[in-house]
Amino acid sequence: MKKTLILLIFSLFMANAAFADAPELPSDILSAARAGDAEAQVELGILYEYGFRMKDNKITALAWYMKAAELGNARATTYRDKLVQQLSSTEVDRARDLAATLQTSPTSK
Image (cartoon, rainbow, N blue to C red; front, side):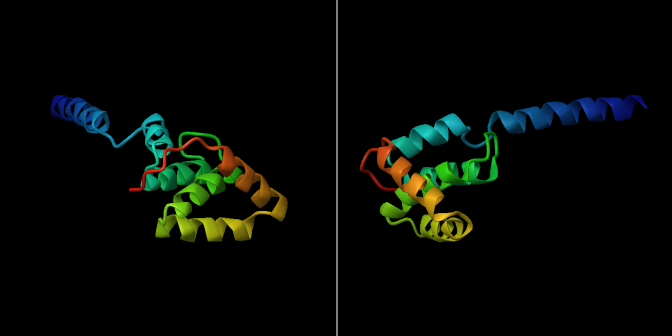
């Protein structure tokens, strides 16, 4: 029993250490997306589309996919085209309007 408890506590500490070095948090992804990083824009779109760590918002997701696709990101183009098929024309128009207002720098990655 004592060995099991020690092993469990050790496992919890190891898991916590692994999460301390976890990949970017949404705020970091947002900063990179605003800086013009197309991959970050795609990742942010995915977070919005599926509601990971934030509210599910397909219109905002589509707007970020559109921004990344403008930078030539092939994955963004695929996700954009797929999501356009799921949304109404009004929602797509709203996403286009939103994409036009997103503040990003003109760099590509």
